[in-house]
Length: 433
Picture 1 (cartoon, one colour):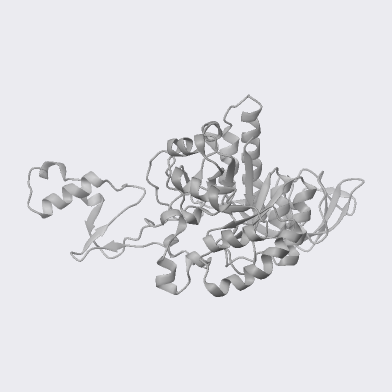
Picture 2: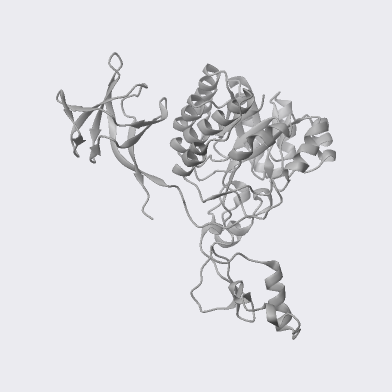
């Protein structure tokens, strides 16, 4: 059975992943992982996380997958024995020195996608080095992945959902060059997500937008015309859609790929023979982790039970949380489509906090700092609760049923799942178009 691996940036997200069916969760250790700009886990947090995962019969992996210099090993030499003592199930590394150090401390090793593993010979070398699993390069097609899985001496993992980088398996220098913040050390400031314009020395501008996708043929036709080749002039009427004289104000997102989404291709992925499906998103909040994990859990279980049928609801739910639009990466040898910003159909609005939960009657008391209506969809998040989505069907104030609760009021909501004091409450609001 294929393993579903979910991300967690904090204990809220960890609980969200576990509550929604993750077989395993990967987290970042403070100091050397590819998401330095999020909170990450202290050693004490990791100890708590291991216990939480064990309670769910799930596995916990710790990322230490940045480019490492000599002084970085001081921290790993100090922490790897502690991770082993805590019972961490594996470490995800990208550096060969880290592979050796992890094996010296009897830690299971998963090689990061940053290593860009893409062939059988490399898999055999990794086996000799003691690597248990590798995350395959994002540049491989599904057929190439299937070929590697047939005779792989180690476990294989692939990404199935989440953000994609314009660089080769995420190894990018753009943030470092522009801002002095290295993507390969987890500090990426994502300049690729901005709007850009690309202008040649001849003042020609490369345009790539929703109305006109770039075509190599049309770009070459334009070049022929510039060079004086006239045999294609009758075909060049639409060339300027792709390569134009700049007017000085065209801005596009040609460096920003859409998000990967393989929910419709679960059968093909399972039949490829890989061992684990990975969800990207260690910078994402708990509701994102909960939704994406639940959807992929349902899809995997549907296939494993022998009654696969794609459900439109799965894709609709994925669109409700953060996304830049979806495509299938390079699984089918298609080049990435570009995308602007978050394209989720809904946004979260912070509206209140849980004051108490009365388990016998299944009622939560909420202190509001914004209005709430019957029929609204809310999200409740906390370090133990994880992330719960609930449609408001019944509300009471001072024992009386109400259809609307106002800012600064305390309201009682009938909620079947247990929530906890200090959990935060958000209202899901349709995004303005």
